[in-house]
Amino acid sequence: MGIPRPVARLLFEEGRRRPFSGSVLQIGRCYVYLRWDELERWARRDGFPLRTSIPRELSHDRHLASEGCISDRTFFLALGFDEVLSLDLLDDERPTYLQDMNKPVPAEIEGRFDVVFDTGTLVHVFDQKTAFSNIARLVKPGGRAIHGTSPSSNHVDMGFYMFSPTLHADFYTANRWQIDALALCEFEALWYRGLFVPPMWKTRPYSPGMLDAYRLGGLNGSAYSVWAVATKIAGAVADRSPIQGCYRESHAAGPGERPPLPGSEQTVRSDPDPSAPPAHVRLARWAHLRLKRGWRRVRPSGRRLPPVSSRL
Image 1 (cartoon, rainbow, N blue to C red):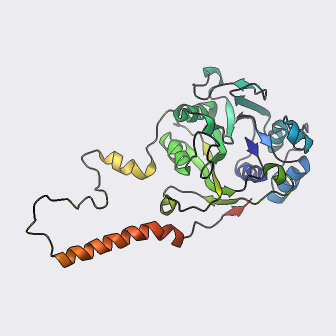
Image 2: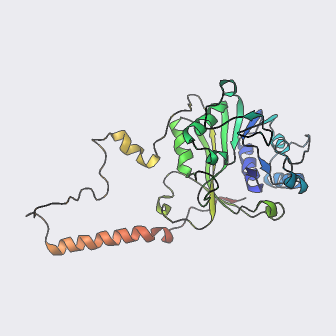
């Protein structure tokens, strides 16, 4: 899991909104694709008060260290945290805690961390309900869960899953968390070359329903990911399974009271209906329906995505 320049800048943005302090737990130990001088330069450009009186260590990955990239510990201390920890399934990267996210986290580390930071580890976990509940349990009251960033479209075989942004919106809403930021990021994953010539990421603020016209092949060929920040406010829980937002109203109405689906008012009759409209009216309705279905197929290409809010 990695932190290229755009993710660092998204963290700068979140840190300006609400300064970082206390402890951060990484879900999967992070690789940082930045040298110290690059981090300082972008922090100055973005107006983020970087902490400089800290140990400056090279990455725990020897390839990144040879490029001059800083360690995860140096990066998070520079953001303002006092304690930098990590949790992983395997011990080859020397995480603080060994934990299978398919299983509930131990009670002794529940509610322990000011920020739990995931850069995409969750897509490698088969049991998503347990994994998301674990994240929520690890965050202390008033703390934040940050997904930065969760692989979405065009991440075939990177993990078990590709997350739609509605997953984060609906999970944290169902569990009564406060959603502070939710965005869809379009990016190029040029890690090693990106150390020196980093590509720009386009980020767009997300709200449920805004991508309805793009559901089936409407996006372009870029890779997308989800940036999400949620705060564990009073009354927040960790174990509620969400109903996808676009179906929540129907579900709440109950099985006998659900609003009819489009077209469900049309019924198939086995016998001729004497009150049926004449043939020319039925033909006109049929043509209208065909045009409507065709428009649904081409509509995404005629619409524009929401405007880009930033280029990181």
